[in-house]
Amino acid sequence: MMPIWFPWMFVGGILFIVLSLIGAKYKNKEYRSIQYLQDFISGSILIAFTGVLAPDVFPAFPSLPTIHEVDEMEMVQVGPPRLIGR
Image (cartoon, rainbow, N blue to C red; front, side, top):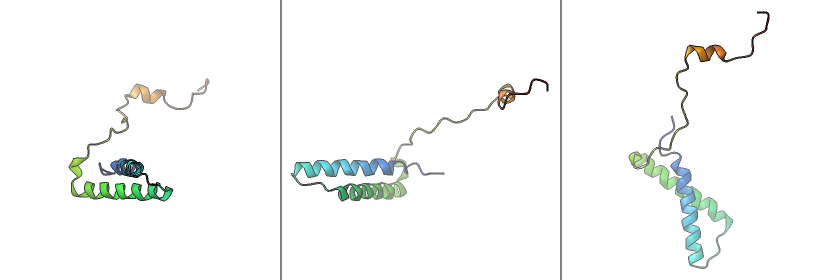
């Protein structure tokens, strides 16, 4: 099973990119394309370390809907159509 903090690594990487881009614009510096990757990796690593050391900090993302119990009547109706003569 995937840890709760794993999807937050993507959010941390994006957040680092945004903060670094704002800092570069504030200082009137050029933001090169390699810095996007560097900042994304840095943010992801920071979130991963935080997730390992303090996993309760991160709330869980909403999960995909689960398959509920299917009653017997629905199970009979699933599948290819029956032949007329049988």
